[in-house]
Length: 150
Image (tube, rainbow, N blue to C red):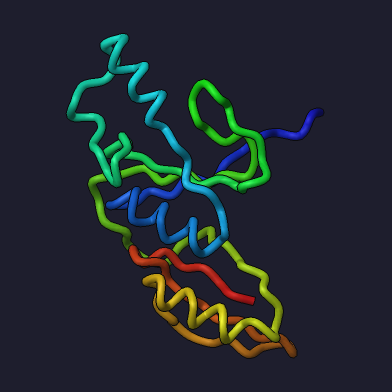
């Protein structure tokens, strides 16, 4: 069996806000979809209700994505072809604890500084966990999605 390509999809209220946060948190690039949106407008496949202009470029109203800056990109769509996180708008709010989360591995010497940096980007510290001779910080992104800093 060949390894499967995948992306992590996060349901959220504000895709652009979370893409900005996670781009800064991970050092990833925000995907650029202006050219794709223009092409789809030309085909009549999308309407003005599907996109908006932010910082002088067309972006989707209901989706945004970040990708690893060293991974390839489809030049026709701007979509990353490697490590990628996609944020999709959904109408319902987050309820309860995540069943899946991201661990960010900075190392013990950078844990405090990185937790402070992430807090300055809009994250919240939920708790510090000390167990089994290990330590990590449980945080939440601007919409309350949990992640850990190790």
